[in-house]
Image (cartoon, rainbow, N blue to C red; front, side, top):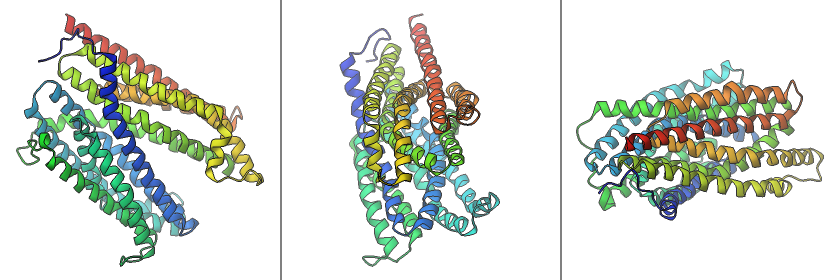
Length: 458
């Protein structure tokens, strides 16, 4: 029985439903971050040159992968709509189309990365660094199909209310990646000693293992078995997924390149500014995993309610998600605002060393700004997730691009350089760009949800 468009959902019910989806996803996100930290720690033992090459290679591959995976978010959105409408026969074709799109994306992604070395050389990077980064990336490229398949599987499992499988497999991958890194870098337990390339090999094997584990999890889950991957392809559905997904990918890219651009500007200010910026971004990125998970959950909740012809419940789902995300980020903001120096000292910086003391002092200033910055960041991420549940992706893409690059980044540059506010000015500019995104996306969400309710009443 479909819910009435006028029927409000109890706050506690929607909160529980959102948290049941979001909490396992948040843990899975943290496990993914842990994989990156593990790679950094393991490669760090090989020295500064290996750490630089591994960090750049990993960043290039996984940042690009994260952007391209955005094109596959539509799988979960369409599955959620189909579930809400009780049109379960549509789910398998959606998933099949998602895998077809994933193959297409991987087919473009893989050959492009084989030109990493000449591109880096053209950018003036040292020859040895370009060579090592290229080798690292080419190994990672072997798991590009699995990386894209994983995006489809995660979206599907989340939309089908099975986020625990994503969490469990994420934790298993964290342990597997760490073990394989250690073995393949140093040649232990019968494995070859591959040094830096051992870390890339470990990541590639782990990602294929995650893909295989998710395939098994889907096969052994009773309510998922009916959705067969084999079957006729619906090319119109594939086109719909692509049209829904490419603006999401662009939005992800716009945000990722905003922070990459800010890091480049920090590099112009010197090592103290760049080091402080990197630490602050790491702290903010860690807390951001929770609103990121809520944004993934809310597009499912909103999509489900809209599929059930219940636009009032869809708006309430969006409001609940925003309240949960903002409450969490506000709590984290209080921590950052209260003990910024203590947080800075967690990063093995020695206050008795003059250069470290300068970094600590700057981190403490930036964390105070980050306290405000991350509240806006959480809000805009969740609002964007809710809008995806409405299948609204193109206008949010344009709004975010204009907010970040049309206003926020130029203002950050002006504050940092012409107004000579340095790193602090740059971070105020970043906070402003996220505040702009939060306001415009929030307004878009309120207007969109109101129109759906009005259409249902008419």
